[in-house]
Length: 379
Image 1: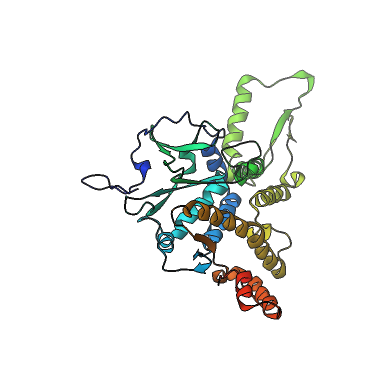
Image 2: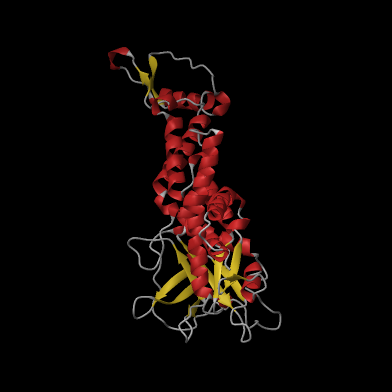
């Protein structure tokens, strides 16, 4: 959002006003705790963090092209807008914010702003946890409420029916207005993975020994006095607790016997359990485990195939979904325009493009224009 010292510019983001503009109805608040999911998953789990970054950065690296009536136009105003969507962000940075929002919240929002001469001159990404859907009388979104610091602004549809906010979302089977994120699908596996790390840290802090009990086996039913019991606890805490006392022998006397009361890491198959949780997290985000360094079939051939699978099954569907939504949304302001990924400029898909070109070249029954259309480069 942009601000001027002597007043607010006409094309500044409307979220900067932070006042209610209209009364369209009560916002439908998201039923899940996004902040807690983001903290436990993205901020505290290295597997989740890497999955989100890997998908977002790869998808944002795909260059986009603008086509007008089937012809690629690098000099079109929409192409200039995509190259520099706002004074604070480049297009790759804005796309990365959108893709991270889809992975962590299941939703991503873009706001279009402008003045009278240029109705859509800037694009801004909005934090998904601050945006709420305001349903209209027919149940479809009539606007979006952006809230921060106890204040809010409502961005309503314009009189021609066009919404200044583009809402991207992943499919949710039980929700009409919000998407379902991979982060929430992986929540149980994330909890297991985080708990495994916390348990391992606690074990290391306690000299890497499993929990146990000192059993007093004196004859005749004799019991330790209160003073003896407190002295024994103090000596154990001082001489045997903590990583600094690792390996220090324990001298037992007076009928004391050590009895383990928990499983060892080997008995728990600790490493295999943690790797299994990491694989489930990667599965939820559509990232092959080999690309995350999780032990398994990590040969060169498998790594190469895993990278191709990531692009075919995760990255490109996400990019196609996003460009399709942008085309439908911005097409109302730039008639005849279509936004599409530039597959020729994507190195990860070079092998697939070469195979496509070879097949088209061998198809002698096709005209040059038909080959170009099938290759996705227009006429």
